[in-house]
Length: 431
Image 1 (cartoon, helix red, strand yellow):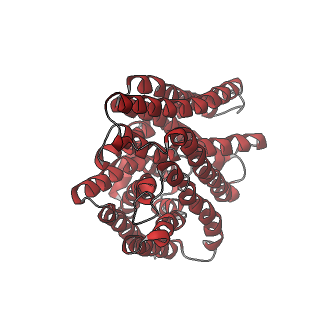
Image 2: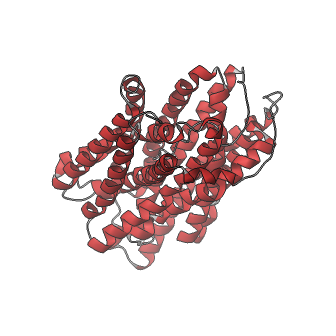
Image 3: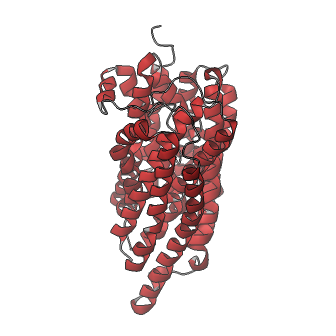
């Protein structure tokens, strides 16, 4: 997520042209923590979006700009961030990324004080800039912390921590950002009462992100203290944008498109969880209770990732990708054409169908790249910008039709394209 998906989770080495592996077991725990942090912070958007929608009386398209501001950072900073990490190294890059996340969290304070939506979007962009740099560091680093033959296993395990963060953060985020004001009907307020509600709501958001900032401050200090932990690390420069000529290869270009669509649809669905569950025809919940259901969406990805890693040992990755894409479309059909608990459970179950999509698309797209695999990974990281584009388009569909059900047609189309890619790439390259 992805990605979120949540999930955005780029594959190995988008940033650093380093050979060999690093024999430092303690660093694995550090990298797992990075995956946990950026997965959780990204998933908070699903809680933040509906709250800002209510505070600023936004339509769905405007509210989805939360995702646009966040994932635009991937388009702007992925490739330059990779070049920066080449020059300054992993640990300094991690410290800089964490500091960027810290700065973004602190910007929520002036955003809450000024109570302007644009300032919230700026804070999200800065926060996401730090997350982008962290991903540029974390993915290649986990691939180097051990023998090459087990790199895939380590990356899959690390992605489990990403999903764990995405599962836990929204639960506590919902309590911090929605809890004390969950029973207030802002539509019934006006004048001074409405302004007071908006002020209290924005302050609750700021307090939530300040708690994240406090934790990040400690982690930044620890990482900076260990900035020279990786001895003999190779530093180099080189052309930044030559990687994009890989898009001339049809299979890679198709895979890059699917990364764009997957991260977009994963986060569009996450952003609509609360809005879907509060509908009277579905569960009719209040915002806080609906927000606590978001971890079930990300939790499906958490469970599916470990189960999927076992299934993919015996099943063709392309066929598996096509199958889960069809499952996602069927779940969306059940979601739209049913009501009550069935409609709610089917919506959340799409997270389970998402589980193996990102790593499978990534591996199929990069197959056969050989020495160009690092370049391909950098491009695929940039395509995470789909999280900035697809959610607002889903919001426009909801606004124009007056129905969230019709807005789910866009995710169905995205999953159909992903399924076609799985079928197209079901055979090893060259067969």
